[in-house]
Length: 415
Ligand code: PMT
Image (cartoon, rainbow, N blue to C red; front, side):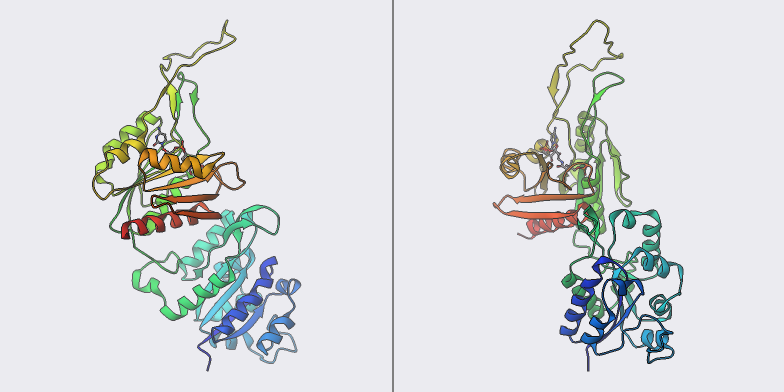
């Protein structure tokens, strides 16, 4: 007898072909898989492929005269342990979230008492649409599990979040859900994430985020392109893993996550003062901010007039190096993590920074790469460890990268 009975729902996206591999991997893991497809999915993959592999009728339409079961959506939905949707389009997510049952798969969702896991895949803009995100949030609240889409190059030749997670990982998560049961019921977590972890519950994070603004006069300033996305992603991930998190946020273009304490700072001087006030409580300091290295030595009190001047010379003075100071004065047990935004010899410069500033970990981003650095939702980086390790992080969402950075911080704690 098969270990688990899985209803594999395939919907109409370019990633539909990957459902074939999911089916094979599930079968290898001793699962009995029945396949249901939406009409649009059949435009991408023939039902015959799934029929040949499962030796079962593949249901697309309840009313199809070839369908051997007159009340298929009821029987199908009652005879499975898991309804797994790969890939899930924005359309099916919308139907599930709103109780629309106008085809076999959406009727099956309404009729099933089995666990439901959804692996979305779509264009980034479609994924990020408030309507899609509303529907996703509704389904998570309804107890549906998500295997979140990942960042990468999409079929439409754009780069962003929306790519189907690796099929091996989808299968791994599906089996973990079946093997471990609904962990959210034990923890009260309704986020839809499979493995609520609190491995950072003993840590207090202090994180600098965003850019700073250095006043030239009351109208003008020197600044940079930092949006705060990377630093806030680290803050969100750390809080999700049980840490207490305070962020000292400079100028950002995105909102801070919930569940973190936010202190605002505009200039490097303000950020320095805020960090000094908070550092005694921190067990981990992360310098994700793009702090201006220089600020005007004497900001003018009134707007500088251009009359009669073809050239304006500004005298700049060095700002306090917050990260170096935190590292130099750290209390026992505190970990100090820096970022490095570089354009050439990325790892070389980052390694020098690590040594100069006495850091435990440096996240080096090459800001010249597409999808990396300032104001992107994704990043590409190398984590450098004090022991000489180099961990390459390929293109992924900043939120995913935040978890990878936290994994390395945790490893430092254990060693
Ligand atoms: O905010 P995003 O748009 O998401 O972009 C993310 C990012 C590219 C800003 C971020 O990932 C990043 O790389 N931040 C560090 C950028 C930077 O200023 O690097 P740096 O090489 O100049 O500084 C090295 C380290 O020293 C950084 O940890 C920085 O926070 C810290 N520093 C620098 C100067 C200073 N006066 N005080 C500091 O603490």
